[in-house]
Image (tube, helix red, strand yellow):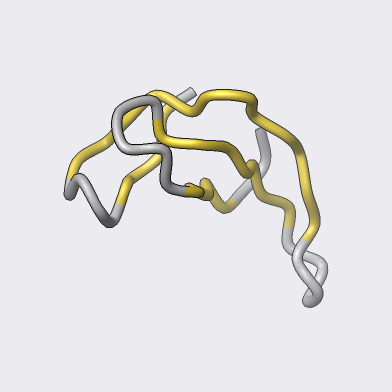
Length: 46
């Protein structure tokens, strides 16, 4: 799965993806950028 990394300014593969739910109830996937190690999110169903 890919998500946009703000630090790299590009779509990157998600390392260690986890399904999470935000406070407002929206589903998302959280993980780590494979290149720079920044936390990245992809909002929506996985």
